[in-house]
Image (cartoon, rainbow, N blue to C red):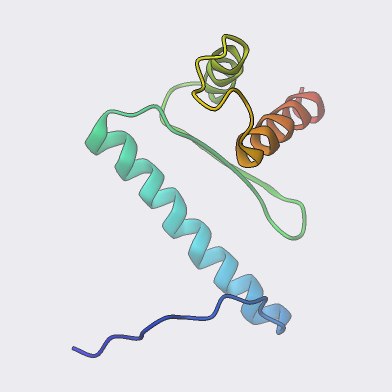
Amino acid sequence: MARRGRVELRRIENRISRQVRFSKRRSGLFKKAYELAVLCDAEVALVVFSPAGKLYEFSSVLSLEKTIDRYQNFMKEDRYVGKHDDPKQVLLYIFICYYRKSYW
């Protein structure tokens, strides 16, 4: 079985191909989130905005808002080991605040 090797990640220029790839990747991502939740009994929340601005969300519990609130409480209590110095965590926190403001 031949392996593909390393794939160069870059923006797909063709708009139609990009939309098809987004749709397939989104489906795969949501499937993996579901599998993680079921197999590992993890609480998983996933929020994705399409290039057109459409919202897609997944939550392994009844309410996505409960998971977001749990995350915010976790960050407020400074249980995060890096104490918010990881730019990805800070960006995620900012995104969740923006999401909450525009969603409700």
